[in-house]
Amino acid sequence: MTNSTIEETEESLRGKASTRRRRARLGTFTGWPYMLPAFLLVLGVTAYPLYFAARFSLFETRMWDTTEFAGFGNYQSIVTDPGFATNARATAAYVVFGVVGCTALGIGLALALRRSSKGTKLLRTIIIIPWITSEVVVAITWRWMLNPQYGPVTAAFETLGLPPFPNLFASGVSAMAVLIVVNIWRSLAFPMLMSLAALQAVPRETEEAAEVDGANYWQRVRHILIPAIMPVTIVTVIVLTINYFNMVVLVIDLTGGGPMGRTEIFGLRLYREAFEYFNVDTAATLTMIMLVVNFALAIWYFRALRRQAGGEA
Image 1 (cartoon, rainbow, N blue to C red):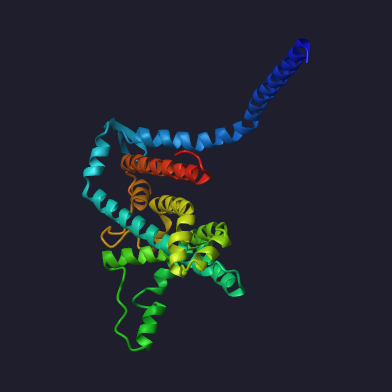
Image 2 (spheres, helix red, strand yellow):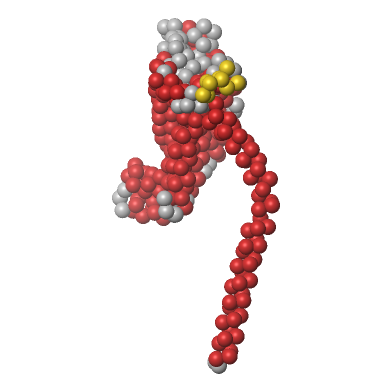
């Protein structure tokens, strides 16, 4: 090959590389007009409410009007408020016990129902029904069922000659237990479906090889299946945590935050401060505190997704 031929080849390669770069820049530029409407919409529904909450959290308010600049006084007031500690304990119990119970039961159901048959398909469908049902309907139905005066559970106790059915909503511990159980029952389908999808990716040959080596069912579950679906399980836990932490509708319709505020989680406290008591400064301050928690959970979520995709955390 002559020198002139080599130079022509190098020039051709440089020209092609330059063309590709121009096309890439042009593609990036032409893509923005299509993205701009969605970007402006997202910016409008997030930036202004965030500015509104941040601004009102630094002022004392009368209804929806600001009065005096308070600085971080609102944050100090809400953190030192005894009700804040009660809300924190209720939120922690609701989220931790709910997420752990829902995830564990979801994985158990996924393991039990992963073999496709008519019976398992029917059970999967039944489990999905509460998940797609309105939280209002779920809460009202369960409150009626557990009513100590005229609920069907009370009627069943009377028919069987059992002691009177207790009012589970009269005690903080039992009310929180009911709230957690009902929420687990409602959202059980999500971890089950996520785990089922992850289990489908586990090679059948791996289980068969472990079975040939003498591993029983529980050993295969513990050492093969659970580690294989762990990345999906972590994502499931994060999504459920975000969902439970920000929940309002189920709580307000099932227990109303009672008794004595023992089931009033942060989401319900925020709703009441803003739309029942019209303490906008307190509501805005609580919004910013919850925003920080949600932001931390979002970072955890995206890092888990990157790890699941094989990227660096």
